[in-house]
Length: 250
Image (cartoon, rainbow, N blue to C red; front, side, top):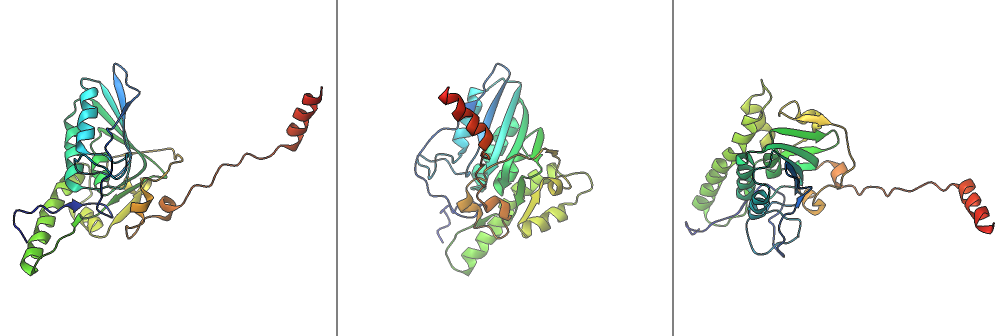
């Protein structure tokens, strides 16, 4: 393996090819607050994206430049994860912002997106949302020595995410407990997540899971995240319909 060759490191189910570029938008901007949406795969900076919902560090930086000096940021997360390095960069950029940050996990914060979600001063999670943590992985080729080096690198890279989790643990939770959860790809609903991490449980909401094509490749994805929501059907009111017909004949 070429020692100077960079290999990508992921905390998601699949590497992400890129297709088109679209900047992250800022919504509900006022003189005091703004809303940012991280709704999609976390990808490295590039001129191309696979999907317009993909979020790059550059997107977040540009969005934060638009909301500089605000008092409050509301950050909405619904993401299956993605690039570890991109995710850590986004986490650090959000953490440095001086505004009070409220993060809302709308549907799922999986993999490196779970790290990004913890950038908030306050984290809110509906009872039907999910948080998933696991160890990073990569794709590599080479001889035995090369691959042992890759494994050692992954161990070091994983410490970056672990440090964020440690800073947000509920009092009494041990680092070893979180490491075991990382080793076993652990999915947590809000009630379970609140046992380990500092977050607030809020009322459940209807949501569409982000990037189902990626989520289905995880080993333990909860079924509710993969199911298509049933369409809402308005019951037919025969009497009301007949009354409306009668009015039309007058």
